[in-house]
Structures are given as C-alpha cells and as structure tokens.
Image (cartoon, rainbow, N blue to C red; front, side, top):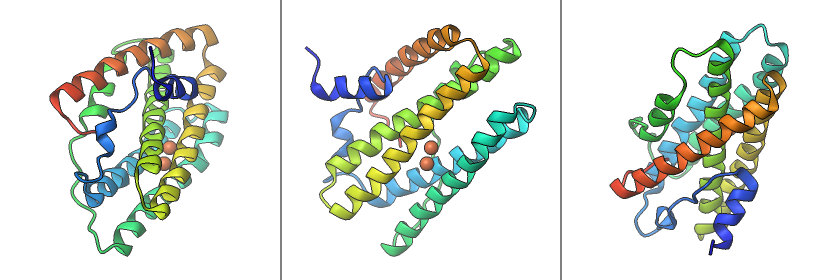
Length: 204
Ligand SMILES: [Fe+2]
Ligand SMILES: [Fe+2]
C-alpha cells in the first residue's frame, strides 16, 4: 500500500517517487550546502528561461510568459544569497549536477523541432516539480519556523512554474502527445531517483 506522502506527491505533481525521507536529516545536512545548491538551481532556472526565449523568439506566448519568470527566478537567487549573507555563510562552488545532467541526456537527440521543443519544456516542468517537492520536505522537516516559511514560499512558486511549463507545452503541441511524453519522463525520472539513492548521490 502506498503511503499518504507518495499519493500526495503523485496527485500534486505526478512524480512517481517521493524524495528519500533521509534527505531532510537535519542532524546531517549543512544549511550552507543546501542554500548553495539552491542558489545555483535558481540561477539555472533563470538562464534556461532566457535560452528558451532566445531559441523560440517567434513563439509570442512563450516569450510573454517566460519573461517575468526570468525576473522571478533571479529574485529567488537573490533571496537565497541574502539568506546566506544574513547567516554569515558563503556561496560555495557550483557542484556537478548529476540529476540535471541525466535529465539532459534523456532529451531526444536529432528529433523534429517539436520533439526538441517539447522535451525542453518537459525537462523544466520536471525540475520545477522535483524542486517543489524538495522545498515541501524542507518546509515540513525543518524546525525553525522562519525557514519553514522561507521554503514554503519557494514551494508555492515552483509549483506554479511546473504548471506553466506543462501549459506552454499544451499550447503548442497536441495534448495527447504531451501527456504521452510526460509519462515517459516521469518513468525515467523515477528510475533516476532510485539509482541516485542507491548510489547515495545528493541532489539539490
Ligand atoms: Fe525558483
Ligand atoms: Fe521555478
């Protein structure tokens, strides 16, 4: 039988597997490392939206919808930076992002313009969904009420972005095709999460 947690995650985001609960083990995690990883995630979210706008400048709605997201993600980056500073912590070096690299590997190679476009949007939808799920865990797992609220706000925002990337895909690509490919992405991601947990890799 499934736990309430995994049903909850599935209902909200369609993710097949919840994050390993050990991920929010406060005795072990370093807030500096979590905030550093988080800072780079926000930065990448902003730059990816910029490259989508550059590549698909002819898709008016996409440009209009993603332009404010760039500002929002950059604002998130700045909030995380401010949090580091406030706590006397440093923005560390960017780590190799095994999770995102594996997702990029799964993107279609040599497909049609629409295939590539769809995979780019679904990659972003997935990253947003997984970030949202992790922020939810942090907001529920951390004891400090300030940090609970800090992460709850990110969680809500990333949930909105996940929804937006799916909606953008459906705006340009046949809904049935989006649904079918999304299912393939979810299956792939579930396998990826499992293999990363087996190896003990940390993802942001
Ligand atoms: Fe963000
Ligand atoms: Fe986001």
